Length: 488
Image 1 (tube, rainbow, N blue to C red):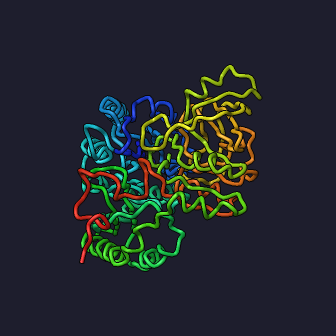
Image 2: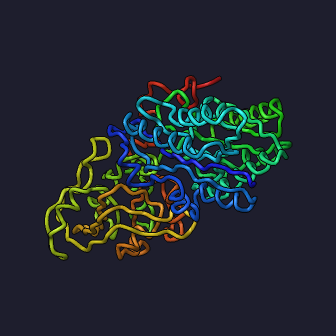
Image 3: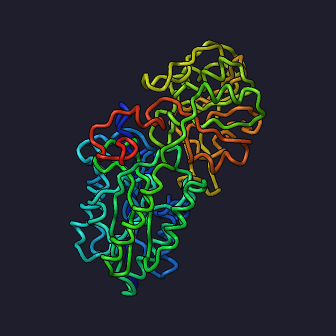
């Protein structure tokens, strides 16, 4: 009989600085699947779970899909949602019966009201039910806040290596290969972790940029190991584990794993000043680009939807509108505006309040006269390798309006991260026709937008994902932690 390996994915990146909670409905609207529905929804995806299926098939191991849940990054997972996710997960594990191993996909930065280390919680529930001798091998997002509990309940963990995350399927394939070697007795994965006292500023997290290359080269030169991972940490989860970490996996050599992890952590620490972050003031950026040719992408770091922000921040839209800087574009989550415009004829003008409705951290509503340009259903497909490995998107009924300052506003009824240009093409918009585009992300959208923008500028706007971490109030993070605390 072939080996049988269960597949589990439970993914959320939880921003504790958002006032609203992530509910069970957020998961059910995004991804919630069991059994063969997991294969149907993720088997051919560019996500790591797609890599799990591909890798197991290549190794002639039977994949047993069990459970998959994902919600777009947002606030803390409310207790009832966490309880229901755990109930369904445990139910599928018990119904499947004993398996030879498990490939798992936690994000690594999930926070629930009752379980601040929610990934550690569900991984410990899995380990408790399958026993200590069954291999559990998984992937992690680069933005994980690694906990000792995650490490102790897994046989091996492998983090993405690129940001934007374009290698997720590859890492899933790698995890499946390691599982096959483990089940055949060819290797005995042994994992260790190190926790350098630092956090990487979100502005410094693009892995292709020069400041990363010395550390990545040092990582490649490490010998005698099966896998090593640099984990940046997620600064918008105020939890005890918040911060960077290193994972090393060896073949049955705990001492070597810990030594290599410590060496890599020490090398990272020596270059810590390279990861503090460069913060571009919004007014300075606007002054600089006012006479430049476009398209120019303005990365709205304070309203980074992929980091959990509300997607309705107006700081940059306000500036473009006020300065009348030519044909510009912004996407705002505003279901109330979409609803109000539902019965308005195309081409009609009216005064509308746009964005700025979630809280008072992301700018006031932009109140102005607009012309209704078009409507679209908000569903689109992405076939290229893009951050997140997602193929199908649904931002709900969507309406496009235009102000008298030539600011085009795409109003969505669901929050949507700007991972795909088809978000705009599907609404009949050509992003290359705009001089300035407000992009609500930092690095994730680069995979799509670098093809049409002359330049991309990260702008240090205020908000729940601001790059100015010193402006956020932490109560639970690791201490000391550079650059919050200085070291001699």
